[in-house]
Length: 111
Image: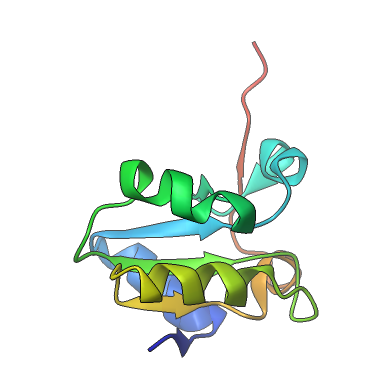
């Protein structure tokens, strides 16, 4: 079962150093600009094909997308849960909430 979490919970988990994977379900172009620290990109249409190679079993997974109106995080989280990953969590408030709170982002370094 996918549990919804908020930014405070996710930030606490990140700061604790607990093993987990943060999944960015936004468009690859958006991910390339910036994303939550350590996040990996996984689109809804690619879950079945890429999840096994990208995500370890038995590790906490948190999925986010653009904002609460975007269904991508819930769709990806649901698929991952049904595939046996997790525990899986949906940060439904997502990227926009993270940015509005002034929390850190990871950006592509320019070479």
